[in-house]
Image (cartoon, rainbow, N blue to C red; front, side, top):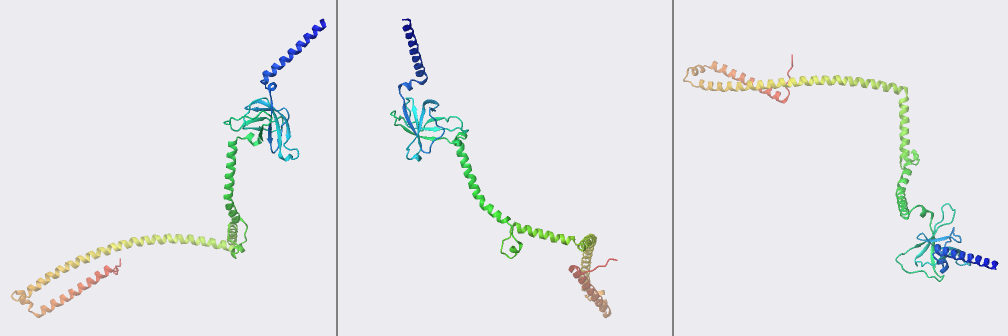
Length: 337
């Protein structure tokens, strides 16, 4: 009897343990493992890596199942890819799911397996009769390091750099042709176009010729004499300019004196014109025979003397006019003593 009671107690404890274990499974697993699971097939046409049996599959970060196995789509045509079978723990999953596998960059550990909803507005659900199939893809290492927006910016920048390089290519080709080595003989014969290399060669030849000319002792003596003569010419030129300046000043004074002389000659001519007018009046009076003076003029000798005086005066006026004409033409020469 005691032995029988003991067995009953042990059986009760074992049963209680199973009940507690079942409660824990229901509490932590949501009861779905016990009340229904179904299989979800994920197609990877190009294969998949880092997937093992029993890996956790999450949706929005929550566990919804685990990987069961990896099988070929067609064992007779392995190039068609593989299918990852996922055991879903009874969740109603959207029909627009895809599986994303993110391999570890270092190749260590299990790769995270996530389910991603491609179209949240689609309210359809996946069937739970083990016929559901969704696509799968492997996240590239670059996608793990850089967000898609940054990748697009880098791609655009790379494209622009390529376009810029394509535009610079003709410039680089022209620069290459400008810098390539060419012989002066070909350039002189017009069989090749002149470029920077030929210009440098000509400049180098010119410098060498100039160095040869300068390096000749005779030419050096000639250059020294030329410099000395140039200095003497400069000194002579300075003295000549001083003399020219002095002559110019004297010429200004001569011009001033000539002007003064011309004014005096004009004044003298005016005075002589007035005298001639008065003489004409006097002569008119003398022609009157009723006066004493008229009687004197009847004397032929006095008439001849007056006529001679008038001729001399006329000649003097002609000489004065010639002097004035020469002065106006600048042909008058006055010698200073």
